[in-house]
Amino acid sequence: MSKGLKIVTIGGGSSYTPELIEGFIKYHEELPVSEIWLVDIEAGKEKLEIVGDLARRMIEKAGVNIEVHLTLDRKKALKNADYVTTQLRVGQLAARALDEKIPLKHGVIGQETNGPGGLFKAFRTIPVILDIAREMEEVCPDAWLINFTNPAGMVTEAVLRHSNITKIIGLCNVPIGMERGVADLMGVEPSRVRIDFAGLNHMVYGLDVFVDGESVKDQIIKLITDPAKAVTMKNIHAMGWEPEFLKALNLFPCPYHNYYYKTGDVLAQELKDAENGETRAEVVQRLEAELFELYKDKDLAIKPPQLEERGGAYYSDAAVRLIRSMHTDKCDIQAVNTINQGSIEGIPYESAIETSCVITKDGPKPINVGKLPVAVRGLIQQIKSFERVAIEAAVTGNYDTALLALTINPLVPSDRVAKLILDEMLEAHKDYLPQFFEEKELQDNLS
Image 1 (cartoon, one colour):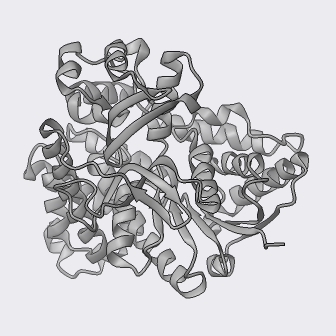
Image 2: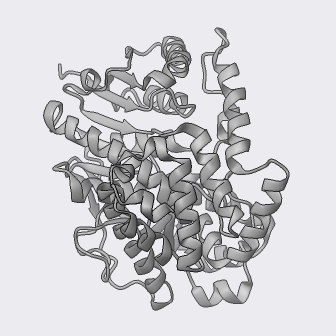
């Protein structure tokens, strides 16, 4: 009898963890997980224990044989792991709130994975993920790293470029959310829907949309011009599209394209939300508090439906589906973040992309896309340039490189505004950015 799988989840005290546990329970026959190690840091110890207790109750109720271990010792947990999932938030939701509020003060969209907010989330996150990668090289070199942590595309590329880990996959719930959105619009089961995806994380397009193998892209493009039928997420306001624009684009945009094609509208909505104490970080802080109160209930032994109000709904479906397909060599098609390897022309071979892949026991195999439509090629290349420069700044802690990255981001209007935001956000996040504050020149630059 083959041994069961060891799963390690770093950021185990996350409110998303019960969804992941639900997935491993649901597919236990195909995916024989025997150990789940939930790992967190000292500041997250209380949440880790609450989530860990709920996970054990869920497993006991389901009657499956999975051991749950809780620890603050990351290296101990990683030893001999088969799959390592990362779902961490450096600085927790307080840092996210700053990422959203500070750019808004300067008339720029504040969002956790786009623009200045995405840049600073990368600055805080990438060094930590690279530390995890180095530990994996030492104690579980054959394990797959499945990263949920945003900005997932930049994190994936950083690991590919700055570690010896090649077995990394970035995972986002946007593609699965888009497929479910189409299923709802068409009144069919999600399993009947397939979208051909290509692009970058939070910059991915549906090249075509199928139900039962028949293209329904034109129908979907017509439907989503109506805000009431927009395919969006809990963390993004539903907005319709101009019919003529979508017809000319002839692609299925993802919810995050609102930030780039509707910049003024989104900024106005964010400013209004901020005035009312309704930035997404503030909303999520309230949701988190409610969820953890629910999780404490000793009679609760299922994932509560309220969890779907978080922006990361369907992560367990996406994550467990991916790991299950790899373990069983299913060779089905899923959209993940992986190394380009020539799949999309105009993006470096070694860069991370988000695209439809055949999922095998040896990992994802990108389906060849070739040239992207000219209407979106430039925007994708600009975002990739931003990501590359941002990663360099995150790793080196170089102020000038950070300013360059922020200035070339399409959501930032000028180098002057970029510098104002950069200086304020560096100071605000100082405790989580040692790589920048080790430079002697920094204080001069901030003056």
